Length: 189
Image (cartoon, rainbow, N blue to C red; front, side, top):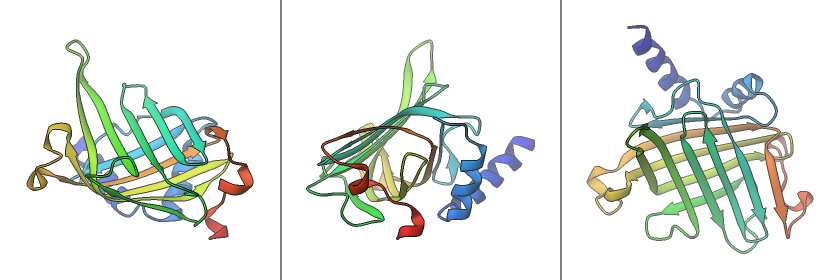
């Protein structure tokens, strides 16, 4: 019963997560270098509440990519690009099943360590929105549809996804662009 109540509470919190208040709440719980990624797939939390992610954000003149892992071997990869992708802020990228080069989201986790069996989803349609990007903080929202790897071309088997990504002092690797070109905060929008 307790886990059911926690799950319902987390679901309600994440559904209302597309607010700066929720991002600030999450940010306050993190230590430097930590990232919290809350994912709901069809209203059910995908990662344990205790998941803390670490990884890198790579920023190039034609590509933005995050690759994060949690302590349970969960993995999230978000990538998008294009010529001068960083000019319009907040950053918004549409995801389409048939153009994963322009924008893509991969959400995965290990479900059986002994058999090395995982469960993973690819975003098939929706939007990636970066609200804040700086040395201090990353805030990103993902909203749309995902399909298991073998169901990408079966829209009737797609699931609704809502996600918030909040990082405190993330590891950012810049190449071919300056902080002045790509960094911004929610207040600047």
